[in-house]
Image (cartoon, rainbow, N blue to C red; front, side, top):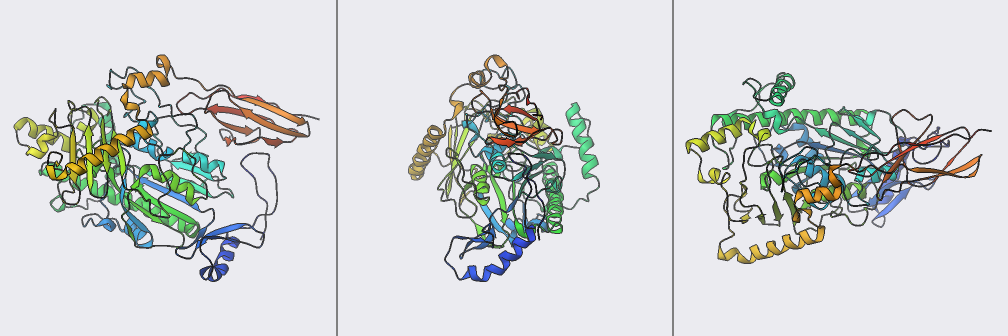
Length: 598
């Protein structure tokens, strides 16, 4: 079977012979019997020498350039049936887990969305790239006062992993949310969509990487829909919740939920937790829609599916907190060949490992300098994972944590700052209102009251095996002195290795990135032509260090930008427009190279 195709990366359109994807898959099936008896770790090629699968005899085969689908739910800890939660109603995730591999010890790099997503998309810890404060794009009350909004400006050479996939020939599409702290550079994604099935639009012959962000488990979906709202934001959110959640039946009996020791066991808190479980059930249905569409499109056997969450629960004991409930998230990976189906992996995985892992799945070597490493196809080999929490909107703070096979060590460099302080967004939660009420009445337990205390010991050590909720601080116990010192040293070494920018006040860091509070502008690229009019070679460059460049031909779809990676040829009658962006900077103006004419 043959047909015409387009090259959509660098260069003008060309035509040629292309096998349909299913021809390659049928060839793969025909060769698997031979592969099973052959030497491990090799590539299967078809009759024309094109790689169609990677094989090793221990794990089977997956396409050499599989589609990759990453589904990320919001604000959710381990509340999935396949991970042992008997209250959760998650049949589609449980089915996905039965067909794939569960990862029970994945830890986000931050317990709040934007810094966590910055680490995920770059493979670098957020405090090393200036993305650690929540949120950079709105003025806050950081060290010395964050007097203006800004965007993080990562070091020169930093690239989001979907952009690296684009450069390697993948089509990259994102749905519903970005939130990376350094803006939304147009070079990262081929397209942004508001669809559960973003790979379906504008499809071409390239393999795809699609990221779908599911929002219904976000903490704001627990905000009330009936009480008088003190702010326009809360009023709008309550209206949204009534509109989007009202058609879904209430499934979870509040009496059946487990209330963590950091929260009071009252009807209000139980209702919030039950509502959270109901929202998880809605999200599970969305996952089912996505997987059904993938199968209906004939892509399930050529796509690696990854499901996880951006950080732990949106409840006050978890979100914004370096606690197990805030950091430890579930992850499921289903391979096309169903390798290790039903297995539970317990090796430590950090969110900074996800980008390098996805690159490796696509056959793309992760660049040097990343803080993460591939950890999906093979165990990570990690002995520790690290996390950080800094300013949270108007609340200053600097917490750091390290987790090993048994312990969580947490350090608070701002002990005058309580774990729970007034925060308008979080205070819209009924559970948070309940905590404030009981605090005023003196009705909190010591564990609950400690969350509001100041000048607590700056170090905490928890045995997660004996104390999974992390409520008993062992830092002062002599029998754990060696573990305390070992993890203390590890955290100090990690900060030095990655370059923790929170060693300086936030305002000083901002001034380095945006001098005077003014966003730098990426230099306009120079588009140069060489060669004869009929055989032009085009090169594009920007004088801004670290700038990424996009370009489009005159007859490309409006708003679409190809990713520039190398000079390309250009025939007569076609002009080129280019623009550039450095992460955190403003886009450049456009530059144009006019078409040549006879």
